[in-house]
Amino acid sequence: MHRSNASSQSATRDTLSTPVLLLMAVAAGLCAGGNYFNQPLLPAIARDLQADDASVAFTVTIAQVAYACGLLLLVPLGDMLERRALAVGLMLLAALGQFISGFADSLSMLSTGIAVAGLFSVAAQILVPMAATLAEPQRRGQAVGVVMSGLLTGILAARSVAGLLAPLGGWSTVYRVAGLAMLVVALLLWRVLPQSRNPSPRPYLQTLVSLGTLFRSLPRLRSRALLGALSFASVSVLFSTMALLLAGPGHGMGEVSIGLVGLAGAAGALMANVVGRVADRGGAMRASAIAVLLLIASWAALLWGADSLLWFLGGFVVIDMALQGVHISNQHIVFRLAPEARARLNAVYMTCYFAGAASGSALGSFAWQHGGWPATCAVGGVLGLLTAVALAHDRRLARRG
Image (cartoon, rainbow, N blue to C red; front, side):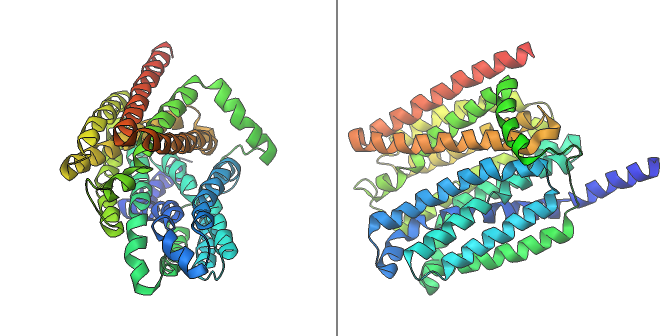
């Protein structure tokens, strides 16, 4: 028995080596980033498919709704089924969605492909808690941080990659390349990942019902979900309006230049790995506090960025670092609340997280329409202050616990 345990522990260390973690990060980035390819390509898609702008723009909503459905309906399967097979299977189906989009000759076919890719791209949210499950306790935060860095880099780079590939073969090129890349990475994951299964799986309906039970019974799941939702709402105020600011008279930038500005946020994605290491040393609460302070401060820089690209870039990098700091420390704490239910905890947390993003986008658009950039920064800053209030509430819960 001792030899078996030692062998199992050794296998875990080997399978979660740096190359394997990086492969998981690439997979997460491909899955999550695939939902953002269409955003810079909408004019070209409308022109090629002879569709009106409003109908084509609705494909952005299709991707978001499909992803939300996947979070609620598919991610909890990680606590029921064998995780390696589940992650690879979902990724292959997401690749199918990318190919459908890449060969679409009508808006309905494109919408179908985007919906399929969005629904099954939640494979990324299977890989994140899987990394936490397979990692040794002292490396858990680092493992989650590496995979999340890949996921976030994929989201940030997707728009720029789509804009750069489109001139080479049209807007469909990025979907075809992404589908092929996802096939290759999925097969590599199948070869290198170990099998991983919850020792006490539940029936599917009971698993779904348990999402509400977990939310009601775990106060810090609620507080950290609120913290994540508010922080992402604050950042989404920026994401929904930055192109309007940069394309306006203050900066006069084109689509490609705006896409390249988005790459500056990739520096913030590196924060995920740093915060993961800090959390492993017991500093999750401290990392959260620093990240929330950065979130609030970034809006001052962004306000000054109305006429200064340097201030805007500084604020953009800082706000993205702040978001990753909050998010990774949140996941580190949430995954420890009920280790046997990590996939379900992730489903609850991420659903709240993206609900915050959708709310922030709507508030940002409203603020821009009624008060321009100053009103936008005011809304983002207020959401940052509310994030600090949520952190204070979570700190009280931690002290009681």
